[in-house]
Image 1 (cartoon, rainbow, N blue to C red):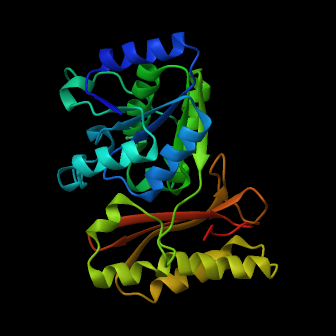
Image 2 (cartoon, helix red, strand yellow; image 1 turned 45 degrees about the horizontal axis):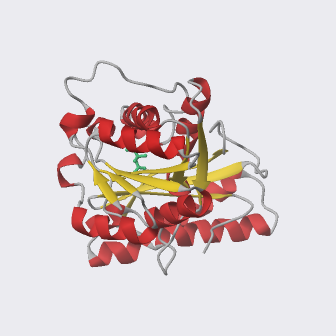
Length: 285
Ligand code: PAF
């Protein structure tokens, strides 16, 4: 695996690969890699001739009140893990490399960026769309791999790629979970031991909801009630939202169908955690 920090060096390498007719898989990350990220790299490895993994803690997607300064990093471990999982080129640009000056040009995807996560974090998706657009421009034609934990992020990126005609195929990969069902996230490291225990209420609440759906319940309000009730049992959990939406356009759904996605966001101590499932399929445990 080669480590590159400069855009033009990465692009030269990618030009060479493309000249040899090689297909490219791109895995954008903010580092502090866990099994969720590694599953994306492995998937990219299995479907492409060459894999580019990027590590960049993108300041544009953090609000001033958020955890940019404390976001966990471990570049040595990441380098080892990225290589083990099958990365060929690891791109780790500095802030200066990515933004040589003030950022005057941004990308925002209307409507679907303003609900759910976007309601709590109004500048977040414009930050994500801008950096991902930049990575798509740098890397060019490729398949790009994103985890379903950030369901709304995938919808925003898919829409951006479609609207701006990127020649990038967006691939979504299932959530990877801890033994007790908690979705893997770099931010889980913020949890104390006790908060970590309480966090298992999140997948439990989704499992309970799915049981009810299997029994035939189709009213979103009932399912929302079940999840909220379960989460409220823990005084450590502060619910941000529990919502049932159409998985693609993210509009609120009253009656559950095969397109319905159940999304949850909570705060536990210093961590803001999200999870989701297809209402009819349930969790992939
Ligand atoms: O999902 C993430 O880690 C980030 O939002 C992404 C896509 C790498 C953009 O910074």
